[in-house]
Amino acid sequence: MLRTSTPVVEVRSIWRNFKSRTILRDVSFETAPGEIHALIGPNGVGKTTLLRTIAGLIEPSRGTVRILGGSPRSAWVRERIGWVPSGDRSLYLRISGYENLVFFARLHGMSRRNAVRRARELMQEVGLADAMHIRAGLYSHGMQKRVAIARALLTNPQLLLFDEATHELDPSGAAKIHRVAKNAARQGAGVIWATHRLDELAGLADTVTVLSTTGVRFQGPVDQLVAMANERSYVIRLGEHTSSADDLEHAIASFGTLVLVEEVAREEYLLRLRNGTVLGDAIASLTSAGLPVLACREARPEIEEAFLTLTGESTDDLS
Image (tube, rainbow, N blue to C red; front, side):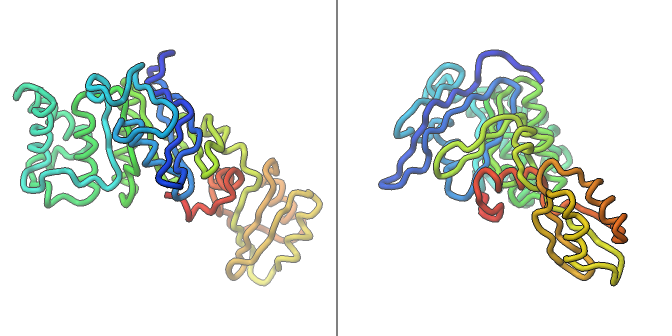
């Protein structure tokens, strides 16, 4: 991953008001070349508004945004931003994805030869080489999204803004887009990735900013966010007719780390343990008490637990 000391993006104390409502409240962060910086938070905290402000599409009520040291509204800077908005439907559906890319490349001032070359490269990169000459109107939603991302990559931008880029995509389609973002970062682009999918952060983002209605609740590496989880949740399955919730609670009570035992299905129990508890020790305690664990799975990823710790919001409210 290519990194330099000069930030691609500098956001300084951004506020954004709409009439009497404050959407963004004192948001600050930096994104370096080669970094994938995730934005996440509950519904209505302004992730899309923040991306639009960074892209120069709207002005902040207060604060400043600098892209590569310049204003996001300058023509020089705009040529260096790739923007993938949520729900983008800006393709011409009667021509192919390849022809769409050639058209938009020409609008950027590329020669016909360079536009054709770049369009072919990008259709290959986003995994659509076999569908290059099919009309865009016949593409699935995921395929159209990948063409929109290819369009954002036409000019080799130094900053890429993704807004819910994998929304409604299956795991295979999402993985293809993740690879595109990672490849752009490896080549030195700064990437800002707004998502409601907490499961995307691990293995994709380098840093994360958690937004709430009161401003920034967390900013730092993803592993530091995970470490903030107060609890971990597991679903365990025991042998038939061998246990009750009271039995489990009594068996683990000696650890002093049990938060909750709750029956969720026949012979399956939700086990919530305080952070720092070794799961293996809890399972060993159950086994020694005559309650062997037949299966165990994570009920809620640690990153979700950390989000709940920070915001007190349900992950159902993410947007």
